[in-house]
Image (cartoon, rainbow, N blue to C red):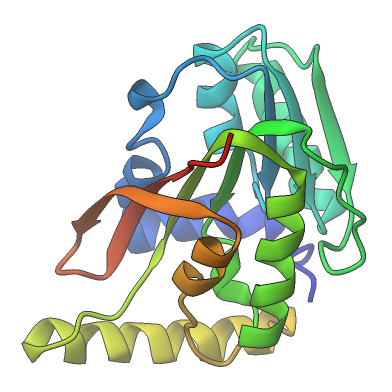
Length: 214
């Protein structure tokens, strides 16, 4: 899987197809969290959430990880343009499936529009890895797509998701061919859903998960 080819076009594609809806999902819970010391962002893409994260928590140490070198370069340039500064930020190019997680290092995990890229067995492994890297009492921010259970909203979502997965499988060799929920894997890693906000006819959701172990 590689988003390098799409990296230069990703911003305008998001703007045309979704406007600011995805960004509102990404930032939905920023004001609900206590200032974290150490943040891990996986699959950040071109850096729109990273900029807001840095503006809010300037003293936090941030690891911004992505498999795409071009996406990481765009994220770094976005920070520079916004004068947010890249001090205390590490840009990590890595495949999450090959990544060895440090134990209990981060008190905030962020996976916006990232976990939907993977098949269920891969998703289970990834969530488990990120759980290893999370500290006791860590928070987990997650924004992603979903399929409503009933009615026209479900039919609409299924059509959108089918088209989306077909495009990204061709363009990026995306492993997943359909949407898989990370909820059971988060629960196994001792995270509890604190709040979920649903938007866009049930197609989008923003989650705040909290680890309750001490």
